[in-house]
Image (cartoon, rainbow, N blue to C red):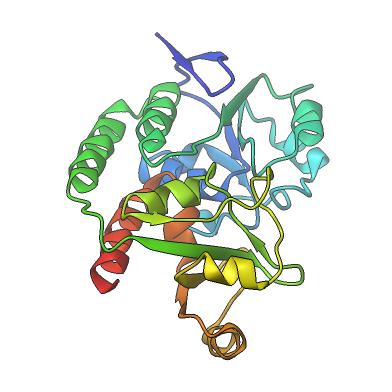
Amino acid sequence: MKYTDILGTQHAAAPNARIVSLVPSITELLCDLGLAPQLVGRTGFCIHPADTVRAIPKVGGTKDVNIEKIRKLAPTHLVVNIDENEKPTVDKLAEFVPNIVVTHPIDPRDNLALVQLMGGVFCAQERADAWCAEFERELALVQPGSPQRVLYCIWKDPWMTVSRDTYIARMLALIGWSVPELGDKRYPSFTWDEALLRDIDQVLLSSEPYRFTEEHVDALECQIGKPVQLVDGEMMSWYGSRALQGIRYLKGLAAGS
């Protein structure tokens, strides 16, 4: 049987794969599927589950990858993501890594295909099926809260947010929260002008990739006169294993709105 990634590339089942994952959330997923013994490399941002990944060699960041380190690890499979990893780097790695598995979830339900892809290619189908069944159950229980127009901030200096064509925005949409469309970029920059402030009900400051804190919340509320709250960026943006916790986290946000 063949398993198809987001680019349409078909992959055969590989029970003895040597895997390098350049995607933090998928590294966590592979570990949760029982595949940690086959992970021979991961990025420094692959931090979950902490006790497990500590023993897996680091190969740089998601973008500043150490190609020679990966070459020495002799992986059979490289797992990458369109948003997180740069194509020129992946192309270089493809010169010596036989199988490149490309991912790009942009909707919560895309987690089902992602988990089935990882479980199928790396022969962890039973665990993948169990995870998908639990995720479907949790997803069915999500009820929208009060509609909210929210600005989800991911960076400061310059300020940056997310467009509607992102995984984060579609997670928020599950509870009836919408983000403004600020141009044609997926992660646009913006300024705190009057038009923008009129168009939003509240601001969400994500804990990653910029490390917003409660101090930022207090300062920004004083500056713009709108409600501001700190949210867990991993729960909002990490697909794979953490998406299950993310759905539960969203229900908490909706209940508090």
